Length: 258
Image 1 (cartoon, rainbow, N blue to C red):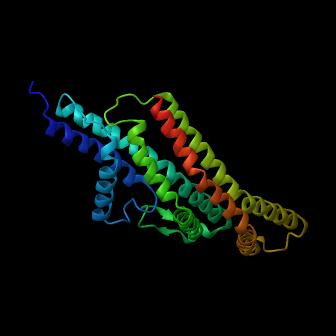
Image 2 (image 1 turned 45 degrees about the vertical axis):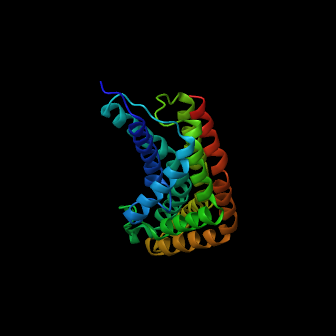
Image 3 (image 1 turned 180 degrees about the vertical axis):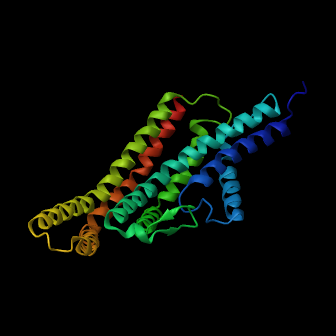
């Protein structure tokens, strides 16, 4: 077997770094995804790979097949970092979708070209608010810094990713589920009370056209509660964005100890 030269080892290092950063860019909120032009994503991937280059040791895979497998693993590591950041936006959007469906605004759902699925107006509003907080609180800098730091925690080509990393990912998912429920709970609770009141009124006064009254009452209640809880919801969402740094730190620590 022909030994790898220095130039080949450097090319392998670049390929592995590029795969990790490509996974990150593909999943991170705002700067990744179908809504961002391909040249922008490619340029960001190359910039991140060059920034992390000095911290990465030369890679010495034994064959092209091994290099391809290592590149796939590196893409998964980068995707995990970007996916954790995306959970913050996803939790807000999911809360908006739940509220939109509960208030009856889901009937006006339209195809979202960025995600490729149906989205309600409230879901889109929550997403853009979360993205605005993500950039306003410099969470994108935290994410990009964590991507570069991941090269030290888990050098490209290192084969083992242990159970601690899976636990860190699971904890991040649980935290974001709690955030989504916290955002949607006040409105859903108020709508539940409205539905209960409508049932009681309907039993007491059967002549009332409940089907005619239910929809405007539900929509009005949902919008009023959303307006009243906007400030607390923003604080919860901002706290989730600020917690992104410690969450990524725990993941990097788990990767480093794998």
